[in-house]
Image 1 (cartoon, rainbow, N blue to C red):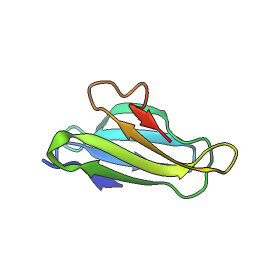
Image 2 (cartoon, one colour):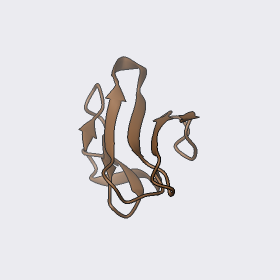
Image 3 (cartoon, rainbow, N blue to C red):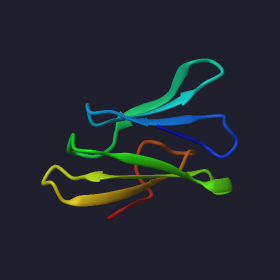
Image 4 (cartoon, helix red, strand yellow):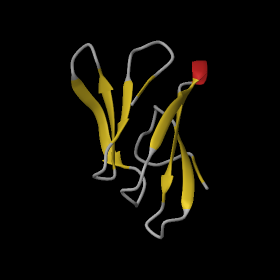
Length: 81
């Protein structure tokens, strides 16, 4: 779990391979979607004032990967490696 820079959103990654972005004031999910392919350990962090979210985890083939997400479009990662 990780708060963004101004505290308006919380990013959560679950063992169900899902990413949840939650607005703590309304306690409702802003976005829920797929993140990494494996249920192994995943981490999330926000990139300061830019608002980008970075997640690390494992692919379906158990290869380490990271993804960078833009809050304007949660449907796909900006960068995957």
